Length: 293
Image (cartoon, rainbow, N blue to C red; front, side, top):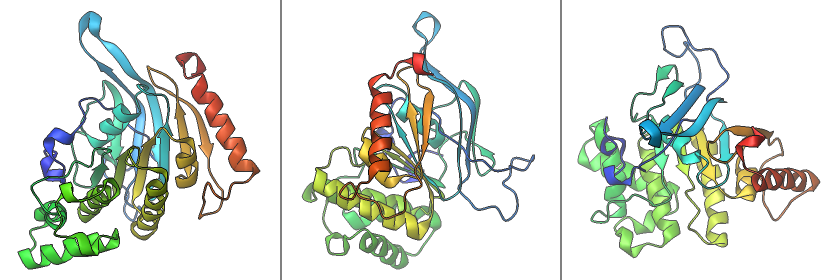
């Protein structure tokens, strides 16, 4: 299935990307998730990725094994070029793995899947379509009547706080509003897994905090599995159940932090444990070389 059928413009898919982490749960030997299992299980087992051929071939991701439990919120943080996005793109099916496997609900990832939604930093909206029609695009695969499709698009825009902006075009919207439209369009596809590649990296601090609250509210209601790529230590600690810290290229997971602090969290209300975790992550990121693996 093409990226377009997943509700994302084809030219918005990054050129490089890599596999992501999976869940700790049993998968039936037939390759199908066990009956009654919660959807959104992601498993990455010894997955590695390399780019180029011959002497120009370079390893982008060292063999990595991770688990994303259904309904969990996991962040990946690491230095630029460490393979975070490559890992995410492999889970999205945009980039194949060279070795190992990645699966979603027991199905091997072999390409883009409508049950795996992706939100990019660049918004990836169709500039010639209004906000409502951008969201409607993701609903076309369900075969809905036009009136019902429009009503559902409006409902998703309302959920992200854009009820009065449905007829605006991307060029008429702020950065935060564009990202809200992108999130609404992705949610309209009813994904079981949501992949987010630094979606708030271009936003100012105040808008970013508002987007954190929005995202956590959506996650709480829809309970999809989230994999969130970020450079921001505080963002990772505020949003996530678990944070994986990656080394420099070739990327590898060098440390995992379980974030069990009660929700809601905020950088405005930090405690000693938050500071301790933040300092540890900063220390790891200051020495990102593969020697930390």
